Image 1 (cartoon, rainbow, N blue to C red):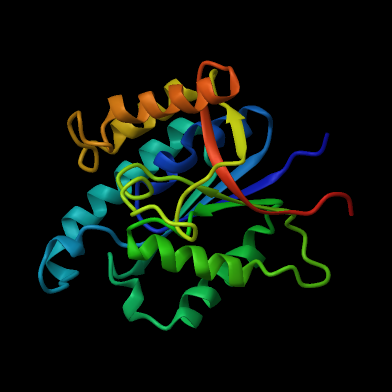
Image 2: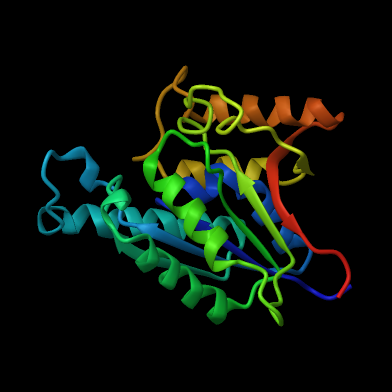
Length: 232
Protein backbone atom coordinates (compact mmCIF):
# COMPACT_ATOMS: atom_id res chain seq x y z
CA UNK A 1 0.00 0.00 0.00
CA UNK A 2 1.28 3.45 -0.96
CA UNK A 3 2.43 5.65 1.92
CA UNK A 4 0.06 8.55 2.51
CA UNK A 5 0.79 12.23 3.02
CA UNK A 6 -0.92 13.66 6.09
CA UNK A 7 -1.42 17.36 6.82
CA UNK A 8 -2.58 18.56 10.23
CA UNK A 9 -3.78 22.17 10.31
CA UNK A 10 -4.17 23.59 13.81
CA UNK A 11 -4.95 27.00 15.23
CA UNK A 12 -2.54 26.97 18.20
CA UNK A 13 0.47 25.07 19.50
CA UNK A 14 -0.78 21.95 21.35
CA UNK A 15 -4.09 21.72 19.42
CA UNK A 16 -2.51 19.30 16.98
CA UNK A 17 -1.41 16.88 19.71
CA UNK A 18 -4.63 17.21 21.72
CA UNK A 19 -6.70 16.64 18.60
CA UNK A 20 -4.92 13.81 16.84
CA UNK A 21 -1.49 13.22 18.39
CA UNK A 22 -1.88 9.45 18.76
CA UNK A 23 -3.32 9.16 15.24
CA UNK A 24 -0.37 11.14 13.89
CA UNK A 25 2.02 8.70 15.57
CA UNK A 26 0.06 5.78 14.13
CA UNK A 27 0.36 7.26 10.64
CA UNK A 28 4.11 7.61 11.10
CA UNK A 29 4.46 4.03 12.29
CA UNK A 30 2.54 2.91 9.18
CA UNK A 31 5.11 4.68 6.99
CA UNK A 32 3.06 7.77 6.22
CA UNK A 33 4.54 11.27 6.14
CA UNK A 34 2.97 13.74 8.59
CA UNK A 35 3.37 17.52 8.36
CA UNK A 36 1.90 20.03 10.79
CA UNK A 37 0.93 23.66 10.23
CA UNK A 38 0.12 25.79 13.30
CA UNK A 39 -1.46 29.00 12.09
CA UNK A 40 -1.78 31.06 15.27
CA UNK A 41 0.94 32.45 17.45
CA UNK A 42 -0.50 31.52 20.85
CA UNK A 43 0.07 33.45 24.10
CA UNK A 44 -1.01 37.02 23.18
CA UNK A 45 -4.68 36.46 24.04
CA UNK A 46 -3.62 36.47 27.68
CA UNK A 47 -3.10 40.24 27.39
CA UNK A 48 -5.81 42.87 27.01
CA UNK A 49 -3.86 44.41 24.13
CA UNK A 50 -1.89 42.26 21.70
CA UNK A 51 1.84 42.92 21.88
CA UNK A 52 4.04 40.40 20.07
CA UNK A 53 7.29 42.15 20.96
CA UNK A 54 6.98 41.64 24.71
CA UNK A 55 6.48 37.89 24.25
CA UNK A 56 9.34 37.09 21.88
CA UNK A 57 11.04 34.80 24.42
CA UNK A 58 7.78 32.98 25.19
CA UNK A 59 7.08 32.51 21.47
CA UNK A 60 10.47 30.86 21.05
CA UNK A 61 9.93 28.61 24.06
CA UNK A 62 6.47 27.59 22.84
CA UNK A 63 7.78 26.77 19.36
CA UNK A 64 10.58 24.72 20.89
CA UNK A 65 7.98 22.82 22.94
CA UNK A 66 5.96 22.22 19.78
CA UNK A 67 8.99 20.87 17.95
CA UNK A 68 9.85 18.54 20.83
CA UNK A 69 6.28 17.30 21.04
CA UNK A 70 6.01 16.65 17.32
CA UNK A 71 9.44 14.99 17.20
CA UNK A 72 8.16 12.51 19.78
CA UNK A 73 5.30 11.65 17.42
CA UNK A 74 7.59 11.37 14.40
CA UNK A 75 6.25 14.39 12.52
CA UNK A 76 8.36 15.42 9.52
CA UNK A 77 7.89 19.20 9.66
CA UNK A 78 6.19 21.79 11.87
CA UNK A 79 5.44 25.20 10.37
CA UNK A 80 4.44 28.18 12.53
CA UNK A 81 2.20 31.03 11.46
CA UNK A 82 1.71 34.42 13.10
CA UNK A 83 -2.03 34.90 13.06
CA UNK A 84 -3.23 36.67 16.24
CA UNK A 85 -4.13 34.41 19.14
CA UNK A 86 -7.90 34.17 19.71
CA UNK A 87 -8.37 37.12 17.37
CA UNK A 88 -8.62 35.38 13.99
CA UNK A 89 -12.15 36.72 13.63
CA UNK A 90 -10.50 40.12 13.14
CA UNK A 91 -8.91 38.86 9.91
CA UNK A 92 -10.38 38.60 6.44
CA UNK A 93 -11.31 34.93 6.05
CA UNK A 94 -9.78 35.01 2.57
CA UNK A 95 -6.34 35.70 4.08
CA UNK A 96 -6.60 32.53 6.16
CA UNK A 97 -7.91 30.56 3.18
CA UNK A 98 -5.04 31.71 0.96
CA UNK A 99 -2.51 30.70 3.61
CA UNK A 100 -4.01 27.23 3.87
CA UNK A 101 -4.18 26.89 0.09
CA UNK A 102 -0.44 27.56 0.00
CA UNK A 103 0.24 24.69 2.40
CA UNK A 104 -2.19 22.37 0.60
CA UNK A 105 -0.25 22.96 -2.60
CA UNK A 106 3.11 22.63 -0.82
CA UNK A 107 2.42 19.37 1.02
CA UNK A 108 -0.09 17.83 -1.42
CA UNK A 109 -1.78 15.74 1.29
CA UNK A 110 -4.03 12.71 0.97
CA UNK A 111 -5.67 13.37 4.33
CA UNK A 112 -6.25 16.67 6.14
CA UNK A 113 -6.97 16.84 9.87
CA UNK A 114 -8.26 20.05 11.42
CA UNK A 115 -10.64 21.58 13.96
CA UNK A 116 -14.34 20.94 14.36
CA UNK A 117 -16.57 23.89 13.51
CA UNK A 118 -18.46 23.74 16.80
CA UNK A 119 -15.53 24.46 19.11
CA UNK A 120 -16.03 27.32 21.55
CA UNK A 121 -12.66 28.81 20.54
CA UNK A 122 -13.17 31.33 17.73
CA UNK A 123 -9.81 30.58 16.10
CA UNK A 124 -10.80 26.92 15.79
CA UNK A 125 -14.02 27.98 14.07
CA UNK A 126 -12.18 30.23 11.62
CA UNK A 127 -9.59 27.57 10.79
CA UNK A 128 -12.34 25.02 10.18
CA UNK A 129 -14.14 27.36 7.76
CA UNK A 130 -10.92 28.24 5.98
CA UNK A 131 -9.85 24.61 5.60
CA UNK A 132 -13.22 23.63 4.14
CA UNK A 133 -12.94 26.43 1.61
CA UNK A 134 -9.29 25.72 0.77
CA UNK A 135 -10.05 22.00 0.41
CA UNK A 136 -13.05 22.33 -1.88
CA UNK A 137 -13.09 19.36 -4.29
CA UNK A 138 -11.94 21.01 -7.48
CA UNK A 139 -11.10 18.83 -10.51
CA UNK A 140 -7.64 17.30 -10.22
CA UNK A 141 -7.16 17.70 -6.48
CA UNK A 142 -5.36 14.85 -4.77
CA UNK A 143 -6.61 14.87 -1.19
CA UNK A 144 -9.50 12.53 -0.51
CA UNK A 145 -10.31 12.88 3.17
CA UNK A 146 -10.98 15.72 5.61
CA UNK A 147 -11.39 14.84 9.29
CA UNK A 148 -12.31 17.16 12.15
CA UNK A 149 -10.84 16.48 15.59
CA UNK A 150 -11.93 17.41 19.10
CA UNK A 151 -9.75 19.58 21.34
CA UNK A 152 -10.08 19.23 25.09
CA UNK A 153 -11.16 22.52 26.74
CA UNK A 154 -12.81 23.76 23.56
CA UNK A 155 -14.96 21.16 21.82
CA UNK A 156 -16.75 19.96 24.94
CA UNK A 157 -17.21 23.51 26.27
CA UNK A 158 -19.52 24.54 23.44
CA UNK A 159 -23.23 24.73 24.28
CA UNK A 160 -24.88 21.73 22.55
CA UNK A 161 -27.01 22.33 19.49
CA UNK A 162 -27.72 20.63 16.19
CA UNK A 163 -25.20 22.87 14.45
CA UNK A 164 -22.35 22.83 16.95
CA UNK A 165 -22.21 19.46 18.71
CA UNK A 166 -19.27 17.16 18.03
CA UNK A 167 -20.76 13.83 16.98
CA UNK A 168 -17.88 11.54 16.01
CA UNK A 169 -18.40 9.03 13.23
CA UNK A 170 -14.77 8.10 12.51
CA UNK A 171 -12.66 6.36 15.14
CA UNK A 172 -8.97 5.40 15.12
CA UNK A 173 -7.68 2.67 17.42
CA UNK A 174 -4.64 4.26 19.10
CA UNK A 175 -4.09 1.68 21.82
CA UNK A 176 -0.46 1.30 20.71
CA UNK A 177 0.33 5.02 20.36
CA UNK A 178 -1.65 6.80 23.09
CA UNK A 179 1.40 6.83 25.37
CA UNK A 180 3.32 8.74 22.70
CA UNK A 181 0.54 11.32 22.80
CA UNK A 182 0.93 11.54 26.57
CA UNK A 183 4.68 12.04 26.21
CA UNK A 184 4.17 14.69 23.53
CA UNK A 185 1.72 16.60 25.73
CA UNK A 186 4.25 16.54 28.56
CA UNK A 187 6.56 18.46 26.21
CA UNK A 188 3.85 21.15 26.14
CA UNK A 189 4.19 21.70 29.87
CA UNK A 190 3.28 25.40 29.75
CA UNK A 191 -0.02 24.65 27.98
CA UNK A 192 -1.22 21.76 30.12
CA UNK A 193 -3.26 22.13 33.30
CA UNK A 194 -3.86 20.19 36.50
CA UNK A 195 -6.69 17.70 36.94
CA UNK A 196 -9.68 18.11 36.84
CA UNK A 197 -9.13 20.64 34.03
CA UNK A 198 -10.08 19.01 30.69
CA UNK A 199 -6.68 19.97 29.28
CA UNK A 200 -4.84 17.85 31.83
CA UNK A 201 -2.94 14.66 31.09
CA UNK A 202 -5.43 12.64 33.13
CA UNK A 203 -8.44 14.09 31.31
CA UNK A 204 -6.91 13.45 27.89
CA UNK A 205 -6.16 9.85 28.84
CA UNK A 206 -9.68 9.34 30.19
CA UNK A 207 -11.12 10.70 26.94
CA UNK A 208 -8.96 8.30 24.92
CA UNK A 209 -10.18 5.41 27.06
CA UNK A 210 -13.81 6.48 26.67
CA UNK A 211 -13.47 6.84 22.90
CA UNK A 212 -11.79 3.44 22.90
CA UNK A 213 -14.58 1.86 24.95
CA UNK A 214 -17.04 3.28 22.43
CA UNK A 215 -15.57 0.96 19.78
CA UNK A 216 -14.34 -1.86 22.02
CA UNK A 217 -10.61 -1.11 22.19
CA UNK A 218 -8.24 0.19 24.86
CA UNK A 219 -7.89 3.72 23.47
CA UNK A 220 -9.11 5.69 20.47
CA UNK A 221 -9.25 9.15 18.98
CA UNK A 222 -12.57 10.28 17.56
CA UNK A 223 -13.25 12.44 14.52
CA UNK A 224 -16.12 13.88 12.55
CA UNK A 225 -15.84 13.07 8.87
CA UNK A 226 -15.97 16.13 6.67
CA UNK A 227 -15.44 14.42 3.34
CA UNK A 228 -14.12 11.10 2.04
CA UNK A 229 -13.82 10.39 -1.69
CA UNK A 230 -13.50 6.72 -2.54
CA UNK A 231 -11.61 5.48 -5.59
CA UNK A 232 -9.98 7.67 -8.19
